Amino acid sequence: MMPRMNLNRLIQSVAKNFSAAEEIFSSRKVTEAAEIFYRLRYVLGGIFFLLCVLLEIHGSSIGMYGKFLDHPELQSILAGVPRQIRSDEYIVFTPFAFSQYFTNFSMISDIVRAAPTNMFMTYGQAVWHPAMIFRPALIGYLFLDQGSGLAFF
Image 1 (tube, rainbow, N blue to C red):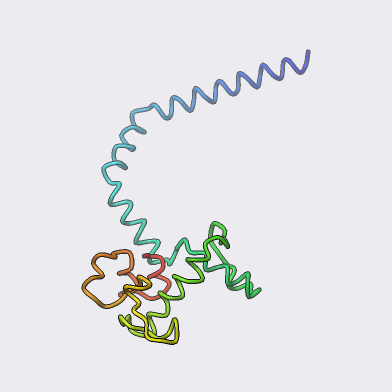
Image 2 (image 1 turned 30 degrees about the horizontal axis):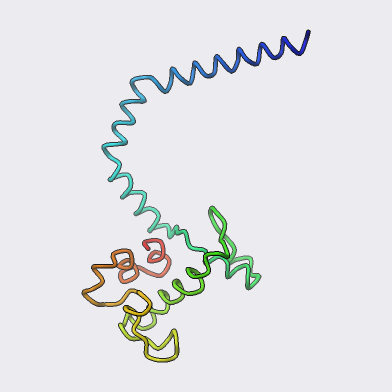
């Protein structure tokens, strides 16, 4: 008889919590707040984007180098897990993008292959060229440091 009584109390408690949650989320103030957030969604998104760039928060798996090199300082991440499957990003694209800082974003670079290579057409990297307007995600590399440029990208 005792377990059945506890089950009844549990069901009553859950029902009260659901009715309280329904009352909170169906209130007029929540609806008005949701409408305000909806109207300001672009501004809030822009603020969030700027904060991520300023704080150099990015989704790169570059932390895999910390695991490969067994270096604890390189393994510090805020959230998420660096994944080995993203090797095209952290082994190819990000080092190529960072190498452009040493050539002042020149169209032709010999850093990546030890031979003159067109970095814009062949590898799609940031360069000082008017055609960069067609690759807006890379423009951050041109004006920001490496960490902020990666966050912008």
